[in-house]
Length: 456
Ligand SMILES: Cc1ncc(COP(=O)(O)O)c(C=O)c1O
Image 1 (cartoon, protein in one colour):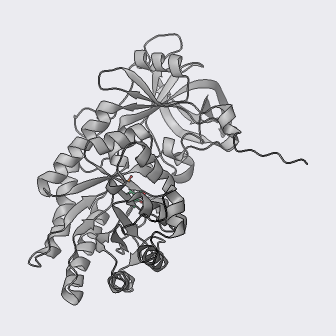
Image 2 (tube, protein in one colour; image 1 turned 180 degrees about the vertical axis):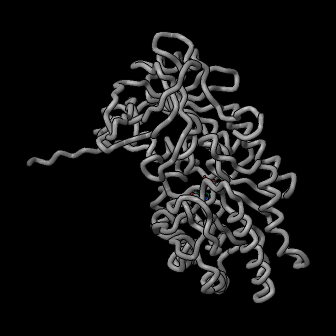
Image 3 (cartoon, protein in one colour; image 1 turned 135 degrees about the vertical axis):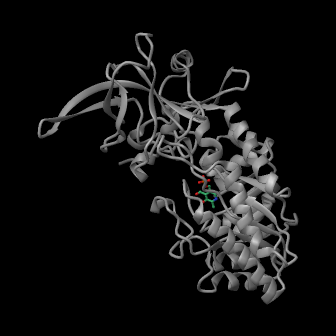
């Protein structure tokens, strides 16, 4: 961590770690309400300081537990949903559909119909086929189409308004991040390219069909520690908005530069402070609009940077094993009671994390003393190396608790049942210090609830 500022990431004290493990078992996701709320407030204040009429949209893919969605909305965020499931989660959390924005590179007709019928505030349009599908729903002679009515069990006479549309643009910028989370370059499945005129044709088609198109969106990538790609993306969509005014008289009312600001997984990660970042992207979006008379609502859509650092995962150490790796060298594996199924990011992107001993099985002081290199491994039948060559106390022992920092985003929301593991619970540490389970551990009954064994 550069400088002397205290590490802002949430972490557990030994007593709390022991109490949580005792009460809820491990592996366990733990989320700090105070941290999450403070982070959203910080982002909102920073954004509003440079763009008073701006809106922050929480990307729910980062963490779609209902409690997190409710907190994000309570704090003033709109909610980005990328599927009917995420939309249903927001609705269950009490978020009005009008505060939800629907994303996705291939939204199915039933999904669009559901979004129409629920009354989502905005659809971020991603393809020409989607424009035609939306037009079909919006102009159905006897609204709503049977699909819409069916989707929500509505009476067939109900009238359905077409949500506002924002066109997703691929601005042709290539961010410095893992290729699996890069989306702003020309070669992407997301949105309409600027370079080949697709974005302009998409706008013209929406106008021709008299669809309520209000602006443009881009999201260039995730875990961006260098903000240049987002700056360039913001500038590109603003330039495009200015051009569409000049060429077609189209008045942009919304410009959304997406999410992507990085977080501190390890001390090597040094994301730009939120205030500086907001100033940079807002200036980039404003400059091309100067003198045009356009004054759109500026939006950002962060996920990770709002919730990642508010969460930790607690594991219990099981088997510890030292193996030869050749030329007299060895590697020590510390296996924990979770792995790939509760955190697929190391396997997907080679992600690195900060791992600390949270508590000792024997109740002694968990930190201090000589360190040694460990490879923390999961229990799955892949190599499932979670955290390679991390420093942990040399006397690490079976039964000790490890906490992995910065797991509030893209962990519970990406969890799976690989190897028939049960997905872990999430416990929220409330602002008053009390503990509130917000998602309980999956049960074996739930694990097998979908199975149908035919007579074989
Ligand atoms: C369209 C869109 N918006 C927002 C986000 C959130 O990104 P992040 O969590 O990096 O802020 C993503 C992430 O994939 C995205 O695809």
